[in-house]
Image (cartoon, rainbow over all chains, first blue to last red; front, side, top):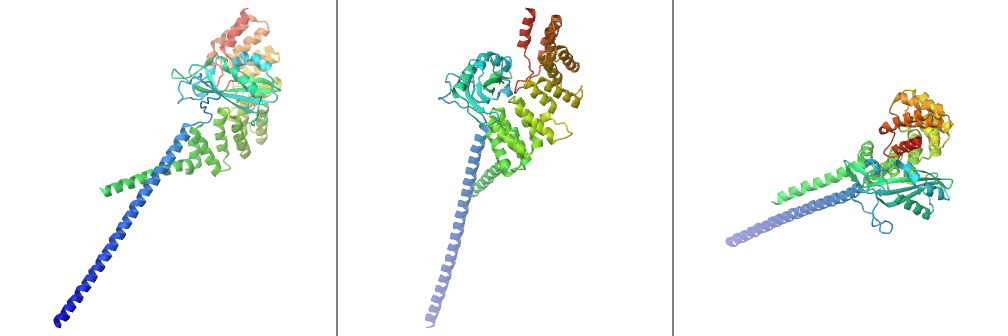
Length: 206
Length: 266
C-alpha cells in the first residue's frame, strides 16, 4: 500500500512534474513563438520601411530630375509643324540668346530694313504683339518656330494664321544670324523676335 | 550575419528617409526667403516655377513670388502669362512692382502708352520722391516712352526733369543723347549739337553723340565738321550702348555709320 501510496505518490509526483514540465515547455514554446512572431513582424516592418523609403526617394529623384531638366519655353521637335531638314547641333544644350550673345547682324534695325516691303504690305485686323520664339542653330540657321500672340492689353489673342505664317517665312529668309558663342564655340540658342501691330500695321520689330 | 544585414537595412532606411525629407524640406518647408533664393537662382526651370507655385499657395500675399515667377515667362516671350503674374504682384504691392512692370513694358514690348500709365501711377503713389524703376530714373524712362511715341517736345521736358533730379554730372549720359536726338527730330540742329556735346563732356567715347553731331552738321551743310564727328563715332563704336536682351531705342550700328559715310562722300 505504502508502495502503492508511494507509487501513487511517485506517480502522482511524476505526473505533476510532467504536467509542470509540459506547462513549462508550453510556456517556453509560447514565448519562443511570440518572440519569433515579434521578430518576424519586426523584420517585416523594417523591410516595409526600407521599401517605402526607397520608393519615396525614387519618386522624388525622378520628379526632381524632370523638374531640373525641363525649362519654360523649351521647344521639342514636332514632325507636323517643324522642318525636318533643320538640324540642331546639340539637342542637350540650347541656351537662351541673351546667355550666349546670339544676334542678327546690325540688329533688329537691319531686320526692319530687310522686311520693310512686307511690313508695308501686311494689314491686320487687330492690334497687339506677335512673338516668335525659334532656334538659331550653331550654323546661324533658323527653325523650330513657335508663336505667341497678345492684344494691346497684353492678354492672349488670335491673329490671322495666314499672316503669321507669312511673317514666319520672312524670318526664315533672313540670313545674317550670328550664332551664340561661348569660349569660341558656336552654340544653338533660343531667340525671341517681337512684331508690334498698331492701327492694322506692323509698326516695330524688336 | 543576420544582425549585420539588419543594421545595413536600418542605416539605408534612415538615409533614404533623410534624403526624401531634405528634398521636401528644401522645396516646401524651409523659410520662404531661402526657398525664394533657390527658385530665383534656378530661373526658368520647372523646379523654380513649381517652388514659386508652392510659395504662392502657402503665402497668398507674397507679391515677390508672383513677380519673380513672371521673369522666366517674359524673358522667353510668353508675355500673356508673364504679365498676368506681374499684374497680381502689382495688385498686392503697387509701390514695389509698378515700376518694374512699366520698365518691362517699355524695354521688352516698346508698349509706351501702358508703360507711361504704370510710371505715372507709381509717381502718384510716392509724392515728393523720385522713383527709380529697375534702377533708372523714372523721368529718364518716361522721356524714353515719349521719344518712342515720337512726342519729342514732351520727351525733352521729361529728360530735362531727369537732369534736374540727378544733376548734370550724375544724370544718365544717354539723357543728353536723347535730348540731342529729340532736337534733331524737331529740326533744331544747332540745339541738337549743343545737347550732344553735353554728353561728350561726361565721356569722349559717347559714339551716339558723335554720330548725332555728324548728322546735325550735315543738315547744317557743314560737311567737314560732319566727317570729323563721323570719324569719331566710328572710332568709338566699341563703346556703344547695347544690351544682351533687347535693342535700345537709340542704339546705333557700325553699318549705319559706314552707310552715312558713303552718303557724305558722294
